[in-house]
Length: 367
Image 1 (cartoon, rainbow, N blue to C red):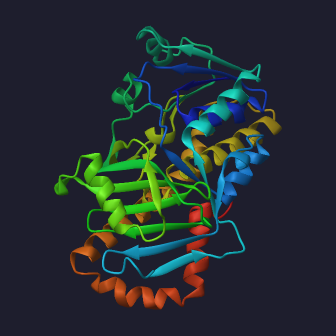
Image 2: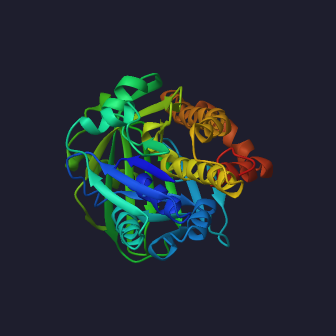
C-alpha cells in the first residue's frame, strides 16, 4: 500500500506519521515555498486531540502548556469578564509552539522506514499523478496553490475577513498562568494564550480598515487591553492574512484534498489544526477498517471520508464564522446584545457543558 502526500506543513507530517504506524508506505513530496520559521506562532490542541496524538505515538504533551479556563471580555467590559469556560481543576486545552511541534514530528518521521521525502522540481510529477501513471493507491494534496488544486479543486466557498492576524510571544513577570484571555475589541479579537509562567502567546486579528500595520501601534493596543501581565519584552511580530474557505468537493479520482486546502477558519477559537486532526482521526479509522477486512486502499476511502466529514466541517466552520460576526456586530452597537445574552449564558450549565465539548471534539458525535 502506497500513499503520496503533497505538502510540507504540520498536517502533512502528522498524517505521514500516523499512516506509517500502520505500515503504509508514505512518500512526501514537498513543493518549493519561501521558508517560514513561525518562531512566534503557537497552536491550541484540544484535550481529546492531544490524547489521540498520544495514542498514535506523537507525544506532544511534554512540550505543551495546559490551560484550565478561558475568560471572555469585550470592548466595553475589558476589566470584567462576560463569560468563562472550564474550571481550575481540569485541563481543557494545550498550547504548543509551532516550531517545537514541527521539530518533534520531523524527529519522529526520520525514525520510520515507511516514510520517504522528495522535492517536486517540475510539472512532470503532477502529470504522472493526473494521468495515473504512478504507483500510488491514494494521493493526498495539502497545497491549495498547485496545479492539481487550481485545475480540479477550485470550487470552494470563500470569505475574506479583510484582516491580518499578528502573532508574538511576550515575556512577563512570573505569575500563575493557566487561564487564556480572549477580548473582542473594536479592532478585532485579541487572545492571550499562556505558554509558561513567564511567557504568553499573543494572537491579534486586526481589521484592515483601521490601517494598523506597524509593530509599534500593535504593541500599544495590546498594552491598552492587557490587564493581567507585567510585560517585559515582545518578540518580533509575524502576520498572516485571514480568510474562511471550505471546499465543496473533497476528492477527484484517487486525489483527496486535506488540511488548509480543505478548510480554513478564523483563528479566534484556535480550532484550525484541531479540525484537521479530527479529519485525520476519521480518515485513519476508515483506513483501519479497510485493512482489517483485507480490502485495498482505493477511491472508496475518499468517498466515505467526504460522507462522514463534509456536513460536520461545514457546520463547524460556519459556527466559528458566526461567533466572529456576532462580536463584530455587537461591538458596533456598544455590546447591546451581549450585555443581556451573556448574563443568561453565564448561568446556563447546559450551554457551558456543550460549548466545552464543542471546543474539545467539534460537532462529531462518534469517531
